[in-house]
Length: 203
Image (cartoon, rainbow, N blue to C red; front, side):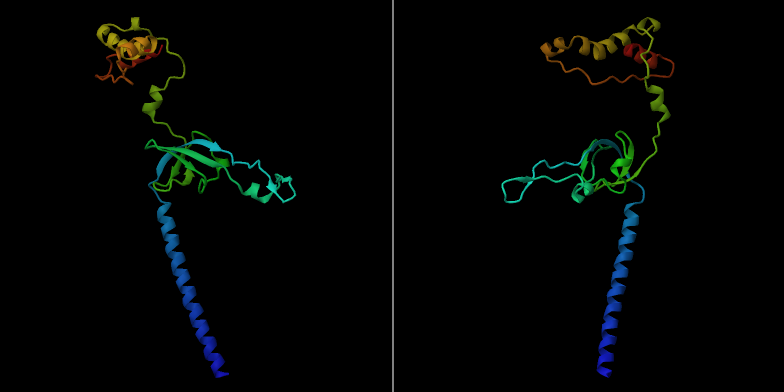
């Protein structure tokens, strides 16, 4: 009986050590998870939401006939949608497993917070706009014209050569071998007609 008691005590001590070790590891993992889910995150946009692939090929049961799976199969229910995200670093990443946010709760173009290394989605971000960006957004075609600008003939000519001509006379640039600029930076003090000239070009 005493031998049995000693054996039980030893087993109890060993089990307690294992339990303490597991609790310690669980605590460490929770702390690591908490650190990984804290700010700062990388901001990204939802590019596409892809439907799970459905296998059309049936399973052969040895009789020469294909056995088709029904839509009620559990494996079909377990398949989840994948995401294609675009980060602020101009990276396009495919995520077969979105992360902590379900793909059904996301829409293309929404802002999300992702991990910097694994790119898993942590949470949705509110749609916020910079006031400076909103001021430059064009919802309707502008009504301004170059005739509304005075004293900027040289600047209008440079704007036309850099932006308008590559679109209206693309073949000329191609024949000469000139690569047109991708954009034009207008600078100067306020009130000199930069925005008005841009709106006239957009019109």
